[in-house]
Image 1 (cartoon, helix red, strand yellow):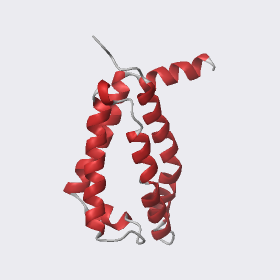
Image 2: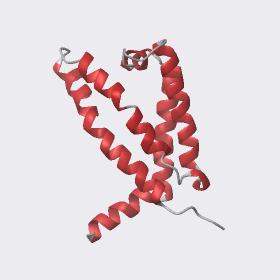
Image 3: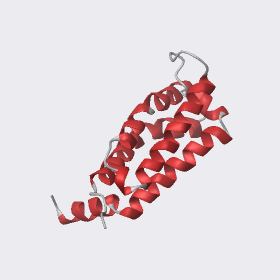
Length: 134
């Protein structure tokens, strides 16, 4: 592993990085409840039940994972990486639904797809950090 990769990995796995990831997850979780409409539209149509139920469930999951990532004692799991992988079908649904939209909307929708990989990597880097014990 090169020194640049080691430095990047160390920065991504530090306590500030974990809090930043937790903040991102918290913000997204809150948005699911505060402004659910756009999230409802992303729920894949093959899922049973109401899109609002899935929006609320995913918002609650993001808030729970945010709390887990924020605490060093619970940061060891794969919850954040799993959550980012689990929401990927919603990003695919958005890209499909917006395939005939304006160029800007298409760019946003298709641009989100490859962003899941760095988010999963970030979650794994934060997870790999040993918990702080005093």
